[in-house]
Amino acid sequence: MTVLFFNYPKCSTCVKARKWLEENKIDFTSRHIVEEKPTAEELKSFIKLSNLPLKKFFNTSGIFYRQLNLKDKIPTMTEDEAINLLSSNGMLVKRPLIVCDKGILIGFKVDEWKNFFEK
Image (cartoon, rainbow, N blue to C red):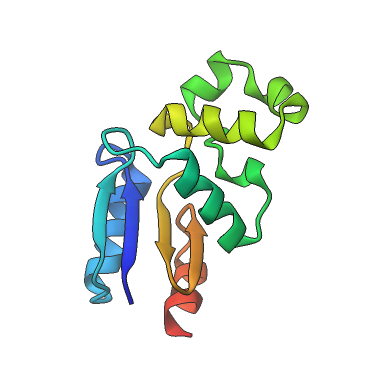
């Protein structure tokens, strides 16, 4: 199974998630979410694979999200507009983000990750 791990190295949650992956001997490819941000095409496929609403992919606690007042703007955007915005800045994307054949994980919750990788 190929596991793609989108993360921001300075994010403490991402550091914990990386450590968990390593401790559980899960091979992964790491991708810096700012330097190699997900493209609009990638995000579209991730959203489809996850069966989650698009808004779950936004880092709602991030500075840029608040500065751009996205809480009020996203509901009025088309899906393409929101995806293009999300792909424009990796800091807008909720992290860590795991992408693999089995599905998508957004954020880091140990129990959720354990269940996901045990299946």
